[in-house]
Image (cartoon, rainbow, N blue to C red):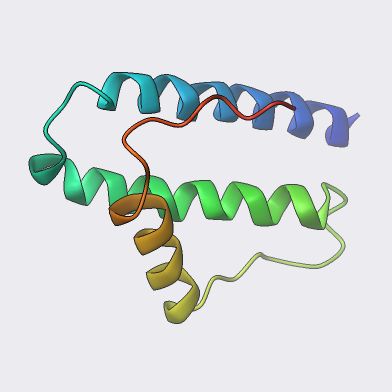
Length: 88
């Protein structure tokens, strides 16, 4: 059903985040800072969706400014140069 399709798509997204981490490991981080910030925000949204579940009964997922800022910092600027893939 829909939940299974969403889980499959989330697994693909996790794999793509891991691929991006490996590719970014050999790059200068300064020029990529905007991309890293957005990556942090998108990865946080995926985390929230996975925690919430795929039933959709909770309405739209909202991410406030403070949450976006923290996700951008944690997932972007404070992101280690390379992270191992997340086991799912």
